[in-house]
Figure 1 (cartoon, rainbow, N blue to C red):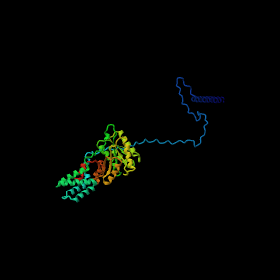
Figure 2 (cartoon, rainbow, N blue to C red):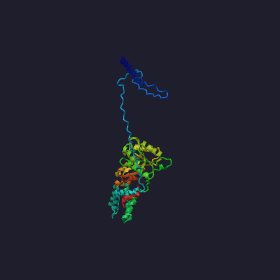
Figure 3 (cartoon, rainbow, N blue to C red):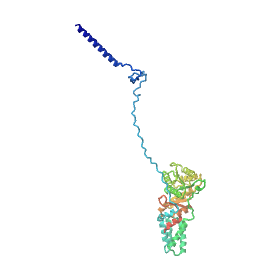
Figure 4 (cartoon, rainbow, N blue to C red):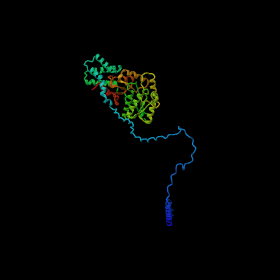
Length: 408
């Protein structure tokens, strides 16, 4: 019995000791012994602060209404890089080289002959009759008058022809042709100076030569001014154009286009502006640019003696403040015949006409207007228009003109 009790006590003591060892072992695992000083210390990363641990004390701020609160804006998409398009610059007008003026009328003689052939053929046919009686000579007069030669020149020509035919006696076709050519040349005039004067432009330090172009609208005045610029450029002159017909915007645009084709600068003014001012500026510009010639296209709405005519005289006076006007060319439409002489008289009373330009001479059989207008004004025909082409304005050559009249 005693032995049994002793065994139980020993078992309890053993179990208690074993329990103490287990508890001690667990504590050692939870708290490991300090490492020796030679072992490096491993520092764990700092724990992340919990919410509110390091927050500042809240500050008092004014409350905003919902209207004052800006909502986050959607981010705009990044702009695409612009695609560079090739910009086409307007091409500079190509400068044309006008046809030489020397012998230009000879080259255009066929056109002149087609319209004037009836005059020459009619005269040669009548002069070739075996008997030249009074009726025949009257027919010759009618032929010349129909061609707008004019009454006084016609009478002079018929009288000279009658005398020479009477002296000549027998008349062969070649003799008659030579006779008629000689008399017509005398009538047209071979002693006129038909050169377009631009001397001022060749004087050292002087102003450019100034040419005013006048005439009634519809005669081809602006076109003639543009073509005259080509004539001067073809002869080696440099040109500035003055668009002094400010009452017609189309005239200004038209003249500038003509100028650009040959490299001539055009001075323009506002529509309805003062023509004299434009003309003055054109000569001033020409002087500064050092060109040879300034061409001034003037207005020509009516051929009356008031208003426009006074204005035309003013243009000439204002231009003369720079220097003399070398030429005042009157443009006449050859198809108007004797009515052109009425226009010529009115313009001659306002400005001193120095030369005549006959346009549309290839479109009429009334080539005798050359004789009539020269006789009326006492100034020569210097240029003739024989077509719509840019180089169809030709210096007037009496011999080529008469040859076209009487044919081959």
